Length: 322
Image 1 (cartoon, rainbow, N blue to C red):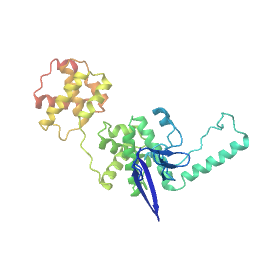
Image 2: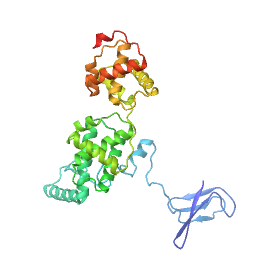
Image 3: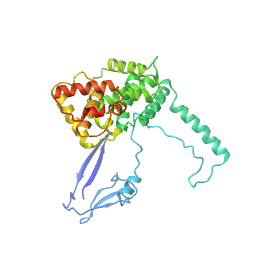
Image 4: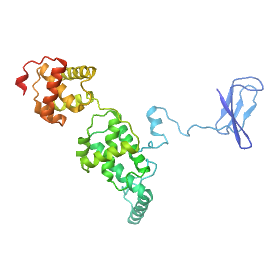
C-alpha cells in the first residue's frame, strides 16, 4: 500500500510517496486510522504519526450511495443571474419531520426569506440579469431550446451588459436577440420570426438588437444551411424519412452547382422538400409546405421552378399538386 508522507518546512508543504519501510525495507505497512499512525508490520517502526486521511468519513458501497452522499452542489450556470451560487430559503413551512412550524417561526422565516431575496438582487445589474435570465428561460421553453444553447445565449447577454449595450433598450428584445444569435452559432434551426413571435418584443426591435450585437460584440455568424430546416418542415407535414433524404440530396446538388448562394435557406429547404414529395408521390401541397416553413406559396413555387430548371429534375404528375 502506498502511503503519503506530508512534511512541513516553514510555510511549505512537501508530499512524498512511501511504499516500504526505510529501516527493514518491508512493504508490510499498517495504517492506524484511529491514531493516524503508519507502522511497519515487521519491525514495528512508526513511520508517520500524523497521516492525513483525505477521503470522506462515510462509506459508500454502491454508485448510487456515492452519488447521493456527494457534498458538491449544482454546477454553476450562466443562465441564472447569480450563477447558482446563492442559497434559497424554501417556501415549505415545515420542519425535517414534516411538522408544521409555529406561527412565530414562520414569521421569522418569512422575514429571513425577504432579506435573503433582497441580498441576492441588490443592484441594478442584478435586477437586470434576473429579469433577462427569466425571459431567456421562458423563451427557451416556448421554442424548445436546449440548455447548452440557453447557456450560450446567457453568455452573450452578459457580454452585452458588460459593454453597457442594454441601457436604453428593451431587455426582452436583447434577450431574444441573444437567443437567436446562440441558435445561429449552434446551427439550431430557429428563425428570427419564430423567436420574435415567442418574445414579448416586436420583430423589428429584435432584428435591430441582433444587428447591434453582431456589430458591437464582433460576432461572425455562420451562414444558415438549408439542410438544417428540412427535418423541421417535414415533421410538421408528416413526410417520410426517404423523402427527407431525397430533399437533402437535392440541396446538396444545388450547393455543388452554387445555386443556393444568396437564397433564403428556408425557401430552398421548402422547395427541395416539395420536389422530393412529388418524386416519391407523397401528397403534400405547396400550401402545406409554405405554412410549415413560414414562407409564402409564391416563394415555394419560384424556388421549385428554379431548382427544376437548374438541376434538370424529372417530376411526374406535377400539375396534380398545385
